[in-house]
Amino acid sequence: MKTYKVAILGASGAVGTEFIQLLEERDFPVGELRLLASPRSAGRRVPFRGEELVVEAVGEDSFRGIDIAFFAAGGGVSKEWAPKAVAAGAVVIDNSSAFRLDPEVPLVVPEVNRDAIRTHKGIIANPNCSTTIMVTALAPIHRAARIRRIVVSTYQSVSGAGAKAMAELEAQVRAYAQGEPVTAQVLPVASADKHYPIAFNLIPQIDVFEELGYTKEEWKMVYETRKILDEPGLAVSPTTVRVPVWRSHSESINIETEKPLTVEEARRILSEAEGVEVIDDPQAMAYPMPITATGKDPVYVGRIRRDPSIENGLNLWVVGDQIRKGAALNALQIAEVACANGWL
Figure 1: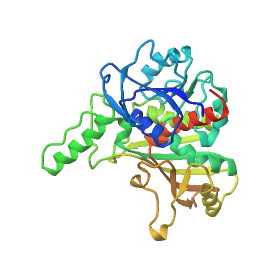
Figure 2 (figure 1 turned 180 degrees about the vertical axis):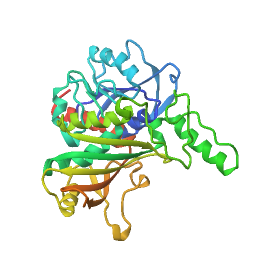
Figure 3 (figure 1 turned 135 degrees about the horizontal axis):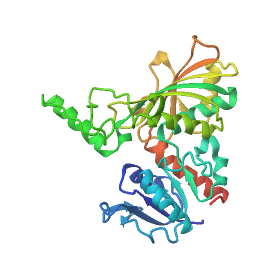
């Protein structure tokens, strides 16, 4: 079997850690694994296939000889190092927002548009986690009945905002339980002048506000969904909300389709769809929840019901592990498809 020299930039973060775990779980044909991070995180030792690998500080020679480079750092890091990795001969699968809307860079969810991988010119973009979860569930319906409008409200876990947000949620819960003052320094945006507690609270802001009063996270869902589904004019109206949940994002999605689709037909289509698992039995109180999806690969769909307020309307409740399918797993699946088809 052919093996590949693999690098992970951002190996010490949550997504990087998930990459390492998934490479082992899915028995990806790694011949050599190089773990890269900022100088601050260099020197850490990470177990992989019975050995301990040392995290190295990323540098000019880090991508020499590398076949596949998974990027799990911020957009600025990706803009700096991705072109250098490509110049060194690597194919970069980038998890940041740096290249997602670049017309020269394919934006891929393998269950939805895997053929776009073959068009890459050295960089393949991984979508925003909320977008990935949504389009995995909606693409099968779109193929069957053509979606003309999406209204989505997200319920996004604190791990989506990083380790500091997770630590702050825990600290706030402990403070509340002990009758101590609850302080906030991270959410909704760490760099902002004002912060709100997330414990026992919801924050209807993820990332900074941009045009028309929508946040950057919300615009990501609009533009990325259009690009992945190849529907430039698709109407998408999102509201993104941070909730006090550790891991896995949930989404309430209302869609309007061009062709009529019954609840039973939608349930069948989704039950047969790649990467989707349906949990939908209201009488048994069976529906997806964050604890259902955490640590799991599928995108889960439930609460499938007709929207009686519009013609050809459906409501769905969708849940997925945003670190796994929303980030690391999706990127690894891109690599698996590329390797299997000789598209590297």
